[in-house]
Length: 214
Image (tube, rainbow, N blue to C red; front, side):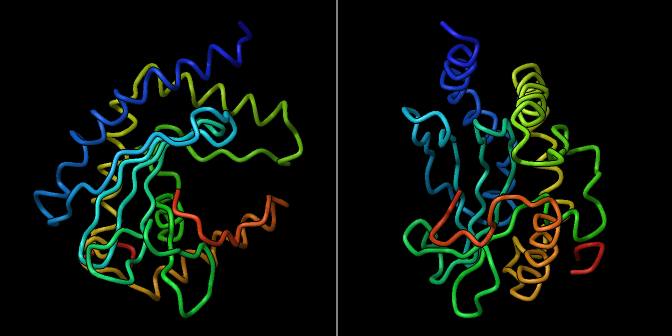
């Protein structure tokens, strides 16, 4: 069995642990912000490049998704605007872009970076990007570095993301801020264009205030 096969098998075997730690670390979404668990999904596990695990919480105006992407060995939190109260965006397409008439989605790291805190140490996996997405060797080096942290300290990675969510996303959790969604997205799109990254205006995808939230 190849090294890649072993890595993928380890990801599949660890997804129940991921869901367990998410439910523990993000319990405040239910207790403090009155979200409710909507789904636990381990998706596309037969197609390595698309494999991911995601736990979704829905509120009145926003859905929070805590995700683990196999290909990038990254974990994160995304926030999706809801068109209808407590109806998951899985039932209504969201837009990772600047369309004015559709629900939007942003990522926790994008939000923290916009607020000037993209280097917060609670992002235990960091947010290193390859100098070029065409450089497979560099991409895999980043993947392997992150994967090692995840399997050594999954609970710590998710605890950090939970603290970051409360630290920077309180305003979103309390009801959303459409202007903030657009501003955060535009900043991130500029960064990706500078890196010559793959196109970031992703349609129909549901997967990533002031400096201090009130």
